[in-house]
Structures are given as structure tokens and as C-alpha cells.
Amino acid sequence: MAPGRDGLFDLVKTVPATLRYEPGVIVADGDFVIIHGRFSGNGRPRNWIAADILRVADGVLVEHWDVLQYEATRAESRSGLPMFGGSFTA
Image 1 (cartoon, helix red, strand yellow):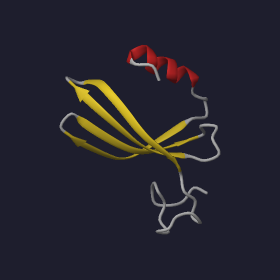
Image 2: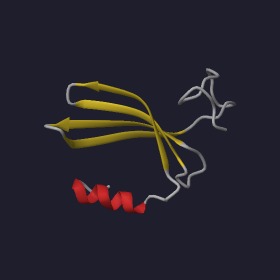
Image 3: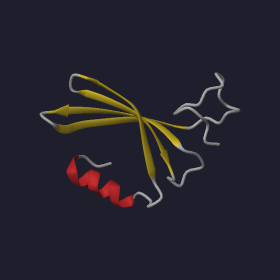
């Protein structure tokens, strides 16, 4: 997405109305916050599991990075555990 406030608003305007986000674990350390979450209804073959990394300065979001991957199915999970939450969605 493009930088700045306009970049964020332009991105939000393009997401499908079916998009849903479930936040999970949230960890903060100084100016950094990491949110582990699940995106569903995004028009992709599978849900996304995300780690969003934010830097906040003086109460303002100043930087954002994310790590995205498709959610593993029960058959793909080598540990037998879901990537997010307490149960598999598919």
C-alpha cells in the first residue's frame, strides 16, 4: 500500500465486503506492537494467518509490516495443532 493516511484509506476502499479479521495474541514492547490474527472472506483459496508488526510513536501509527501465510489444514499441520485459535476451520 502507498504510505501515509491516504494509502491506508485507499487500501480499505478496495477490500471485499466479506473480509473479516479476528485478532488473537497481542504483544507490546516499547513502541512496537505485534498482533497475531486471521483474515477470512478475502477472496483467496484459504484464510490468511497474519503477524502485523506496528510501531507507534506519540500515539500515532508510524510504521507497519506484516507476515502473511495461508492457514494450514489439519492434514498439513505437522504438530496436529491449528495455526490460530483452538480448532481448525477447514
